Image (cartoon, rainbow, N blue to C red; front, top):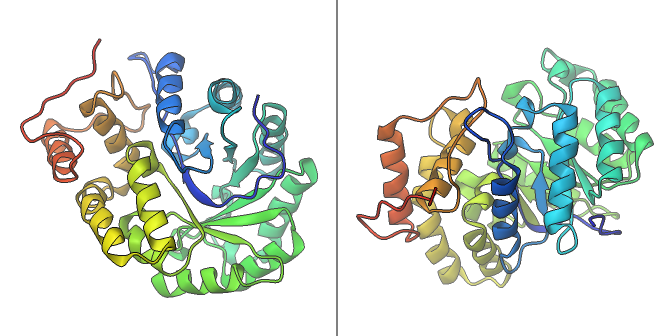
Length: 321
């Protein structure tokens, strides 16, 4: 199960959600059902687990191992699995990377350590140390997660270039720089290298614009709800069918406005509620400090799903208990 050797991260890669029981324990059966549903989408290239979308910040090491293990059992034979590496220390990140290889992951999505938030961009050797420590622990391909500079966790352009040069297992960048001009520079520069590094956009709030710049893939939590629309948009842009791309984007627009509204941190909370509204998830439980959305916001999500053509107007679909 798992480990598709030689996997090169590109194309449409949804990041799936993690279902919980009311007591905040992991609901494995519901999570596996969700995984299988997303994995059945025609045209996706891989699935990401243990990422932002699955509340990795609130999961222990052993829980992350369990999640990857049952994910590999559920879909690993059909699709490569990308496993998040979320850790503030490089040694713990390397431990997660080794675990991911053991449990059948095909690639790693490496988050920037929060420990670098207070000026790490001024010490490029810290980023290099982090990635070299992980690369020494496994030969799995790495997807570098690029954050906005405003967070204090974004790697400056020069540092990014050093990283991809000195750590050859970095095969892709999940780009969330949140700066269209810089994003296009990343796409043109990284994908134009003698050893190209794929840009997987995660600018899901303006996905069509980003893909039109030439990103060779996308990695997004919104794929947990609308993987088929992401595939349709990606393929339309690739074949330069502007009318088809615009038609898909018209459907995505209300959801993008709903998912990525302030507070931004509730985006995956909103996606869970949408799956409940669509009858694809039994309950939308999130672990603290995240908390349940208000009924008013859930109503706005229902309206967005209706505007996107994903549920009929006036529908109040509820998942069967």
